[in-house]
Length: 292
Image 1 (tube, helix red, strand yellow):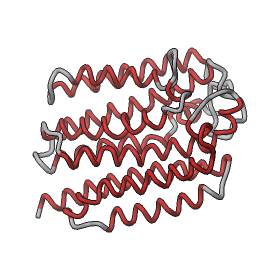
Image 2 (cartoon, helix red, strand yellow):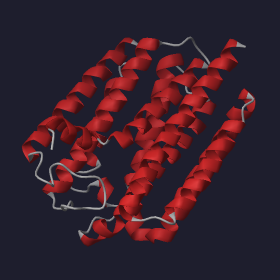
Image 3 (cartoon, helix red, strand yellow):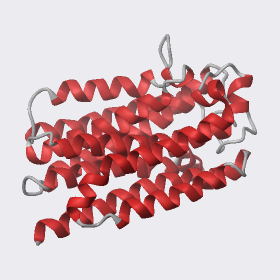
């Protein structure tokens, strides 16, 4: 297999939209209260994408190291497990990518206070805590909580603050909503892998609560997200967007209930893209509202 293709698979492109979505939403919230700071927005975007890639690399390396991945698994091909990438190369790629993310984060000090260094350090630590350490969070049913915090609350709130030096109430609700939408991507992943995970002792939330309640959680996350942002969409005069999101979400929930194994992979990608499309729609609606 082509080496470039192998590394592209390791990046897990289906997950990248959720990193982008949080920053777009945060910048849009900030633009409601202050002129857009393009440099800060670009640095936030670069940091978010690189941190996501580093997390994906770390997850692959540590799951392989600890014997949690097997060849021929239901999910996407894992290069280290299949022998296409050496464990050493993946570890080096993980460290290199998180260092690059931190360098991008340093640029944000031109736009914000010193405590951004602490925030960046916490995010970098979370990249490894998700899959490594004495109590890997992804293996103890904490993955969804991590996603809500580090793919919803943190990127939206920090991106918003770096635009307007404020944490508006709307952005708080919006950050939780993005977190819940993004957690659904992990829910699909863990719903698909629940049998493989259970067989190797990986205790995800899907393993604990079972398929039926996992589907219910997926459904409720989308509904709760729409409820949280209904107010801001009402003020923007564009409630059609959350309604459209909810309709598509209901369709995806129905499809999840009828599929299993590798047939769930496209739905994972669609769930991630739905979060991105929602954020772009929010940014467009906000821009139109500001110009009026």
